[in-house]
Length: 102
Image (cartoon, rainbow, N blue to C red; front, side, top):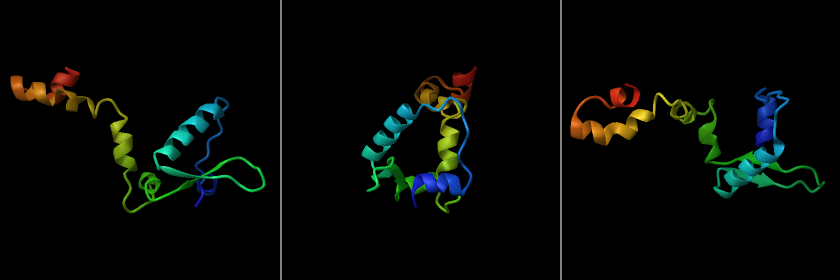
């Protein structure tokens, strides 16, 4: 399934006046190079279409084996910050969460 058709089929598209398509194209090219998405060039010369593959399906919320909630959790600074203090916590004692957030 193509990513764009998935977004519009499930109503995930967002109307934003500040969409920088140049940046989005660069991000998608990078993700294609890392084999996260597939890239398709239509024969009619239209814009590039990006598709899902076995790696990008892990990011879908409706998938049985989704990692979407973990990815979202890791983007909240409150959650991953204590991991940076585990070694200090082990050497000096105390909780890593308290060392990270006071």
